[in-house]
Structure formats: structure tokens, C-alpha cells
Amino acid sequence: MPLFFGRRRPGIPAAPPPPEKRTIMEPTAVTDRDRAMARRCVECPVCTRARRRQRGLAYWFVRRIEASVCPYCRAYERVYDRKAHEPVPNEPDVASMYR
Image 1 (cartoon, rainbow, N blue to C red):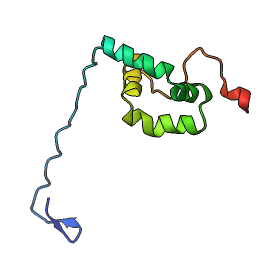
Image 2 (cartoon, rainbow, N blue to C red):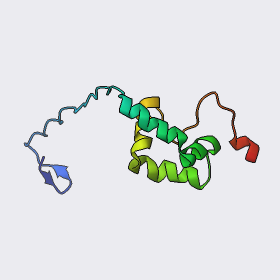
Image 3 (tube, one colour):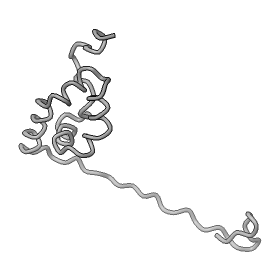
């Protein structure tokens, strides 16, 4: 759409809006390999500490860096449908003990 000093030129119709782009992602099936890799994330001392304490260096590391780098954290996300640093439901709140 041509502009003339910040306004549309008279007589030139506006361009039609672009079509909506929707990408429908199909859920991927969780494989045995994903489950084995997620088990490594469950057993990882850094990830476990981040999940339980929800603060500190381990939490920051898992939240900011490791989730984009570590294949075990990505597998944990696929298997359990939550990020590697998010707390495990129905587990006592350990962070409140340290406040």
C-alpha cells in the first residue's frame, strides 16, 4: 500500500489483509526413548533441586539455559507435559521450609 507523507494516496485501494496462518501441530507420540531420556532428567540432581526449591542458581540454570540445550529436559517436557523446572504436583512444598 503506497504511502504519501504518512497517508494513503487517494484513488489507490488498500491491500487486502494477509490470510491467517495457522499451524496445527499434531501431538507427537511419546516413544520409549523419550521415556528413558525423561528418566535421566528426573534423576538429574540439578533438575531435581530446581523442581523442589523453585529458586536459586539451579532453578535459574534449568529455566534459562538447560531447557534449550539439554535433550533430557526436552524429553521430560514431552513425556510429562510440563517444563523441567516446574514443580511436581502433589509433592510437599520444600521452598517454604527455607524461607
